[in-house]
Length: 296
Length: 202
Image (cartoon, rainbow over all chains, first blue to last red; front, side, top):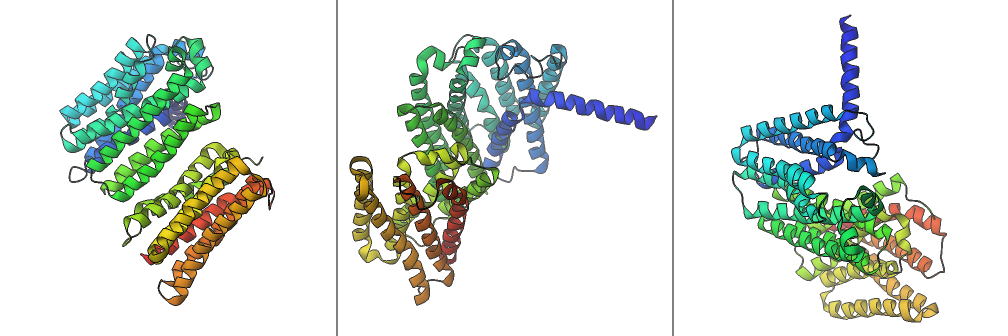
């Protein structure tokens, strides 16, 4: 009888996990978590202890997942109108709004409590990221203006700043630069993505740069944004004291990105557009690895 | 056209990672100009690997490939000349720049046999420098025996570069699909040979 109950519980947990996993956008959450851990490791030892490291990983994972689930709840009507997102658990009716809302609030609250227990300043930064993402970006601006992505960028830059703050105990210029690089990378990422799925966004009535200012201007903004990413990450790495070898590698990767940006501006195509989107993600991930490898 | 496979992507990723390592490691005891040459060469290998992973073999249809395929051996050979034969560095640099310009001009404005001959000459000279110089230095005892691996890499780069160049010029030595099948493996082996050879010289 007990074994039967245990099997029932295991099956229930497995079913719930399968439903909840798409709600937290594991790839996006994973990437933001990587930036948070990078920010922490950029502060180097002696602040790096297993306890704090696990605390950072757990609290950030909960807070990022929580805000993502809350966004899913708030954007469920938009998701239902877009072919790319219509099969997500909420618009597809696989999970109730109440259950998802409960999950999102629980995860967010748990992440915040854990964050504040680690450090007050760290908790403030995590809270700011969550608040800007859910309230400013999703609730207030996303349906009103294409410029909402700037705030999406600000919230995306918070995990790396939070990690740095936890490691260092204070805000500093390097944390600001690393955070700025993520902020500027997010438009490169989102704008190429929104151009690729422009029909979907139009159907959902979401204002994007492409629909408001045209594809040509959007590509120019992506080019400028990419320049800003390279500039801020290079300065961040330089101030961190990384060796010339890593700066050379960053320069090489930056040349590759500029090449794609130039082709995207002067000889645009769908393939180049989406290729740039993928390259920008690789660029950011590589930069994070460089920070981690470079400071050790 | 041959679609890029998962195995191709793994080989290209390894190529990119090894090239990235070399860019970071640089070469100890070298002046800045040598490091710049090697950074360009290994940077091209890294970016090539990444772009092939992202776009697949379709990117090789771009006309710029011929120029990039020439820039790789030219920068690598210039680095070797600047380090081991500094007396002829300027002369070789003039040859490299003129050669690259010649390829550009003949490729885009002249075409035909002249473009093919220019390509073969410039590739040939750069490839021979990369092939012969490290091996002769190893034989003479100036460098470690393992440095001759750079020469092996040079032979492979020559093969790869010429295969691509002649394919792009419309006179393929092997079929397109066969070239694309061996290219990721060739790039990886070439990069390993270069990096191991250079590490032995540090």
